Length: 192
Image (cartoon, rainbow, N blue to C red; front, side):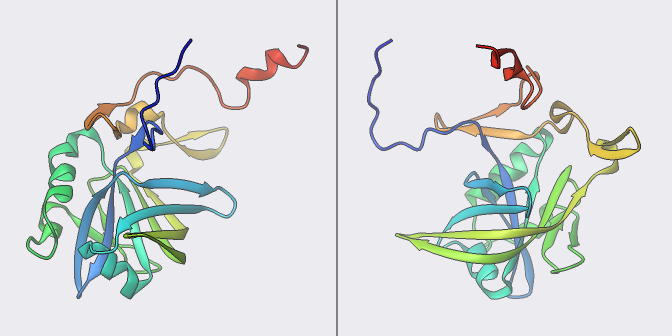
């Protein structure tokens, strides 16, 4: 199969859409972000990348804390709106029921099925981007999406969470069906 070169495009997919929350000048603010990733599980580390000029960036710099809220597709229009307007001009906290993380006071969104309370560990400056590496201090999950299996609580099937995903074709998508179990599907190749 021949390949076509598209240039310097970060074509990694799918991209989770999240709403990053921070307190800016004493007010809760949220921005839609696609530049979000897991950096490790133990310890629980995440990263987000924001433009240095974003209103939210100044709040994270000031408080050294933020939240990552994972909206469901039902929140698509509100999430998209948070990426269109600036918190400098619009009070975006009025779009949601806001609560504070217990350890940092970072603003979080009640309507989102999952919220992560994060404390900044490192900040990397690359060109006009600020990359925040943070430790997840707590993971808040709506009880509707938590199930107990063998006496342990765990998050429900990803399709029930119905997260918003994004691609570089500038379209939002819905997650598809599960097709296997991690670190088990390749066992058939051990004898190869």
